[in-house]
Length: 401
Ligand SMILES: *Cc1c(COP(=O)(O)O)cnc(C)c1O
Image 1 (cartoon, rainbow, N blue to C red):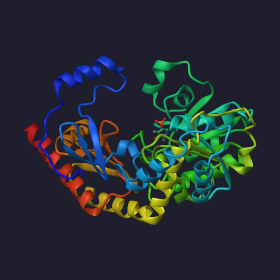
Image 2 (cartoon, rainbow, N blue to C red):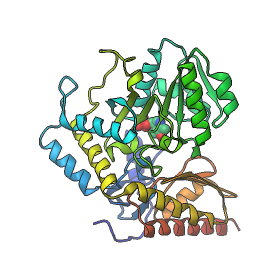
Image 3 (cartoon, rainbow, N blue to C red):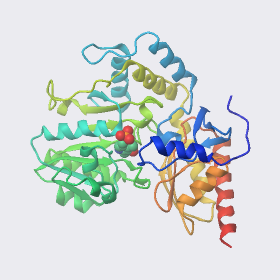
Image 4 (spheres, rainbow, N blue to C red):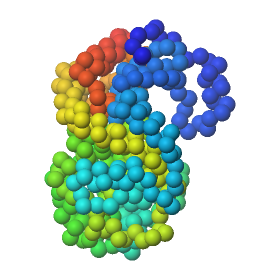
């Protein structure tokens, strides 16, 4: 049981040195190592307990070690762990049916293992339209493989890896004029997140998504909603785009889908599904029965425990409490994907101070903190989170004087 609050110690130097000996330096050296978790609490190797308001970057939808996921995975792995796609398996089939149902789309499904792979599949499908141009948005994030990186609207991430895919156009989020002007008869696909997560938690307005739908339909351009971060209940609805009432041609999923196990999915509307022909795409692990059974447990738990409603309520509470904090100048997002922008304080400093005080959150940009707790988070934990944020801000301000 992860319950007690222990005293905080800094990470051992010897551990840091060993870590740097074996790992490539792409992440920088983490200064804590997590060993176990339960619900919204997680414990490090020194015995410190943290309130986890990042959830492995919006992945642990039901928190850590949820009994329903443990049960589903344990049962499935002791029966059948992997089949390849030469043979079908029951959990994958059931999950595909369930995803179609909750998406509200008349669609067909492809399974993969991550967000970037889901977007790669969408990119390959867009090539099959025979059109060459792809449109994406500035500050967007779609993944790290060459294809997904090519449509990621962040210059610093792209530049070291040039040349990337050609014919990509980046527009400004929520700019309706550009949508009308730039989508043409050569535009294969338009990629958009319903809320830009990695970009700093910026919402696409309902008006923008509706206009995008009208124009892409008129030009016969695929509208691809990247719901990798915003899907699976994170925004208080199953998928972020559902608030706008539109029907995309393609949606891509990952992060929360497997509840902590690696899984991605692509849903393609039946109208466009035949673009992809036999032999044109695949994944060895995609639709693995163990991860599919975890995803089924995620969906049924969200349904049985009314976690969509909880995400909305706890998100609203979080926003209300954050609004009372002086140093916060703007709060963005909805449900349990919330970003707040700071004045006079670096987001990274607040992230570190909160970590020292027992709260995990994420400096998503220089001045913005991202919160993405598990959908099971309760009122007491939300209140405690904001208390720690206030304490951490006070402590940083005191240190400045
Ligand atoms: C995280 C993320 C991805 C990439 O997912 P990976 O599983 O890391 O490949 C793609 N799109 C969005 C919107 C994301 O948030």
